Amino acid sequence: MSGGSVVGDDAEAAATRTVALRASHVIAADPAAVPGSQHPGFVELRDAVVLVAGDRIAAVATGERGATLAARADEVIELGESLLMPGLIDLEGLVDIDHLLLDSWWSPDHEARLEWSEVYARQPREVLSAAERSTLRRYGLVQLLLHGVTTAMPIATELHGAWAETHDDLLDTAHTASELGLRVFLGPSYRSGVHITRADGSHGIHWDAAQGEAAFAGAARFLDTVEELADPLVTGVLVPCRVETVTDELLRRTAELSASRDVLVRVHATQGLESERGILSRERGTTPLGLLERTGLLNERLILAHGVYLDVHPEVHGEDRGDLATLAAAGASIVHCPVTNARYAFWLDRLSQYLDAGVNIALGSDSFPQT
Image 1 (tube, one colour):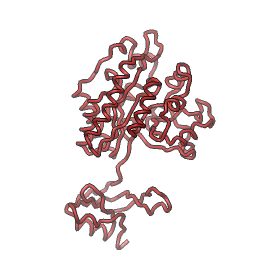
Image 2 (image 1 turned 90 degrees about the horizontal axis):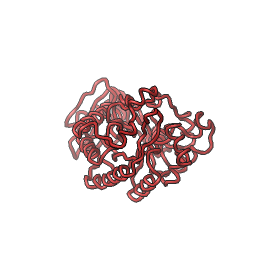
Image 3 (image 1 turned 120 degrees about the vertical axis):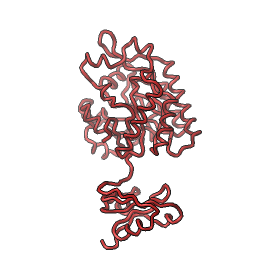
Image 4 (image 1 turned 30 degrees about the horizontal axis):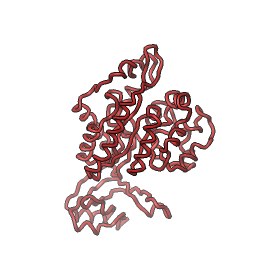
């Protein structure tokens, strides 16, 4: 194309310092790519120039138009044979060592060494110092950026913590993410109980209401802290742990706080059969979706991590009994983590089925490397 193509408008570039990024392949948003859609489509451009004016993308162009943009820019960065694309969004962005190594479903003997014992659960401790935890999370955030993620909702294992994440841990993470230029949705995890392996090899949940209350209070305080930070890169959210380890009461208060502060909630649910669905059925007389619904969490602010074991799954009922329609009607979203699902061998029963039902699907890595 002799004149080249252009996506965007570079008129505003004249008012501020500009940088031109030139790459062999560029993925650009283009509203015209999907006629009639409210969401932009994307086009692939070859040998293109992306003009950045201040903190905004002013224009994307190829051919003579791209050459003109580069000639007018204050600085030109040659990226060569590379792909330049919009940043990825990872709603299960791992920021610790790959906890697949710690909490996998190993053999019973090996698993017993990795899960908390009943004795340890009564007096847990921080295995890592605050400085070590900070370094660990910095490493994880950098890895997210290196894998193309520019917006993340981080996740970290609680296995080596004294109970769950803390207000101060997440404040440190917020500062680090902002320093790196990574947009994050953050909140310290909280739970009322923890999975344990008993001396006889059986499994259960050790409950500690006081720990749960303290952790929830820290999560609520963190929302205030984020408001005080007034950092456009940091958004406060609520992140209760695995749903079977949080009491009904704490889940209800989570829903109330979410509604009053208009903040998102990400909860891990519908990711386990016996370890979650079985426990909830026996001990609380409900299903994971039933628990979320009766505690007021099943709405458009809910982000459901994994969303695997619904009624359509062959290991549950193997037929559609309304779970997908319930999720769609509520406006809840699912974070699909295909790499982790493959490693653990627990799959969504046909992603197309979820999409056809109108369930909103986001993506998460939940593992390292974040691919």
